[in-house]
Image (cartoon, rainbow, N blue to C red; front, side):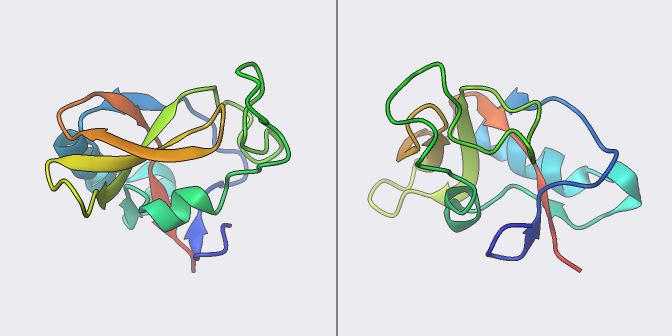
Amino acid sequence: MCRYGAGWRIPGLSGSAIALNWVNAIAACEATTTASYTDWHLPNINEIKSIIDYSRGNGDSRRVTIDPAYFPSANVDVYKTGTTNPSVLTRNMYAEFWQGEITGNAKTTTDTVRCVRNAI
């Protein structure tokens, strides 16, 4: 569970991330009923930032800046968030998991998506 209260891992649950644009990512997460839960959502920027482990990546593109003990299938990729870039409303924020960098791109861009759910 991340410090912002989102459940990131369910014991015994595995799966791969998918790539979607911003609108489809939000819709797909909200429609998810994985493990019989219905409170899944696209993580906001604070939720995604809370799982970045800056001691891992250090700019090395072969190292994932996310703890593989909790995210065994995580890969070095861009992970989309549900947060709109406050400076450019047609862009969303995302995290680069090879550097731990937070940046943004067009909402129409297809990026990796991992849905999260609210903590109980």
